[in-house]
Length: 498
Image 1 (tube, one colour):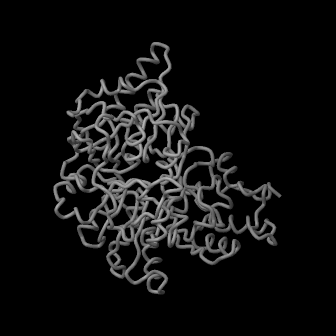
Image 2 (tube, one colour):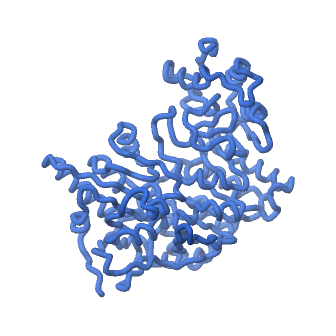
Image 3 (spheres, rainbow, N blue to C red):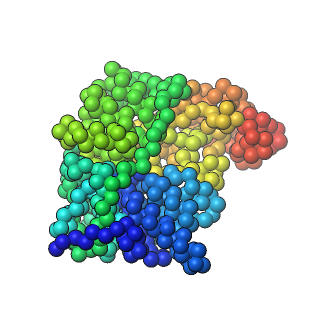
């Protein structure tokens, strides 16, 4: 059969109020753009008439402004999962305008298959190629595309000329069976391929192909600075020392790294530490720094869900696919983040914290415990199952008015049971094998900023030192309370809580 080519506006008109929409992509890479932009216009027009128009959005991770941004501004989103980075979406969530469900990324596809969030009415999938017999070749990310394509009765394909057909073959599409029929995921090294380079669907489900030429709405990151460089150096020195001690094999282990400036600095430091051999990555996102290290031979292979790179970098990859075709693979998010595979491969995880408390609990999602930043992303998938789990952050923020090291985190995403290492520009706290009291000492002495060391020591002095995990229930969030009151955690007076 011949596929029907339609405009983005015609495709958007097929979506009705109350629909559940499944999208391709993972970060702005590979996500649908044209149809969602038109959908926002429909929502605005319906709202102007006094009619309701909202949809629920299910994705692999974040999207770009042409999805989360325009739909948030049009007040077109009722429910959204599992992760986002858009500022307008964030404001709407924290104003109570959107029901936002923050889910571990490895669980998103299977929770849709299990029926936890209702039916998928339509899937919108970005592709670099689609064939008349129903083969969909994805662009720069895997995400939850295989699952939403299978579940949705209607599929809209955005055939995006901004993504070269040279990328056909980058993907390894594999969807596990559901319990009780699930088997092991047969990945034994990061470069293993276990699926197909395309998603196969019944072509009768493809209700329209929208031709676009819309580059990914890639986010740039600021250049390294002395603080991020020092954090990166601290991580590299720690891992090199563990390798010398025999904790990490001399061949090294695969790495997972989150997204952002600190992650780039860490990878840059690791990549240029000559005491660390060339290594592989089994991760959820690959950034520009990784591509550079692959070219230099410092990273041997990158298994990922998303090429979260600038458009210039992505174009360079497409132009040089003869070089990259055996050095990169893109997987669905439930495979790139699968706990079983992460634990089997011995992945070392490196993620960013908003704050950590003196016992090793980490908050990676909420400012002040209540205001959502982005979401947990894949950090929990990797942290609990990592060979070594590392969290990084600057020791202070807002010109020293906020300490990232606090007595008790205002929101807990990763418990002390899963966090092995905390790193700031001040140093490294190795929490492995330590009791809570020993962890507190290590974190205060090695990671806290000098302005806060005595404040945190004084907090411990007023707790019940006989307890297994000493806390003053009245004072535990005192630094947060002081921030809300005076705007500076350094002004906390523990005597007010006695």
